[in-house]
View 1 (tube, rainbow, N blue to C red):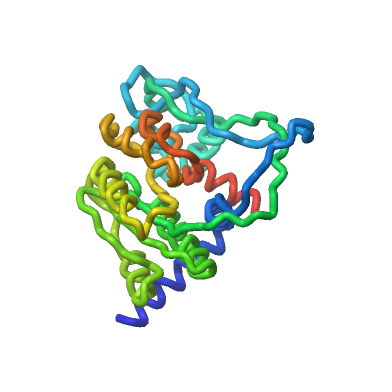
View 2: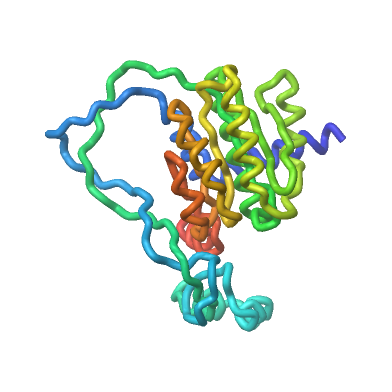
Length: 291
């Protein structure tokens, strides 16, 4: 049993090495309060990516059929083509050309957009970096590759927390909430138990957010960074919960979005939105670039 748990940990360490973008994202998130910044009005301008709201398709209401590369909303006939060996190559060709038949949905989403802003010049004054409280969506829609990425990302945050002498507390949520503290004395044991958890069931994000806000009221976690990992395809949060988040001015709320179809009404309450491309198209393109 111990060897199996150790092998699970080793397997996820190997997976994390093959996903350098996850490691870089964890390092960026871990440094988010490292220094104070002063913005120079005469600084040169630099392009960078931000998330903006634009009309797009999200899982709200079906509005017809069109051609796209939206794997999540394929017509059954397209899925059948992918399962036939003789048609598999043709399927991937049409995927890259965005010519797969998919359901067209109405709604609003978030997109990356390149804008130019002055470069921030940082002072050397160090800011205290608090612990992490990481909420991980373990519902059925987060299964498969999303599950592996979510677990690997938590493993990367645990490494950063241990190196910086910070605490790392995990809250798994679906219909129930399961808690682990990965930097406790029994952290390795708890980490292997967490990595062995299966993702299934529904999504009760409201209950998890309420439990997170209750924990942040404890003085022990007064300077914690809150991180939520999810596809954010869930029921909208109540206005009471949204107001409680907005009142926690001294905390930072990070969203690690593993779907482009997360509900804007949930994502807009976070201070930072970090997008992870776990879609089939993105994975194929990354594999082609490194082939």
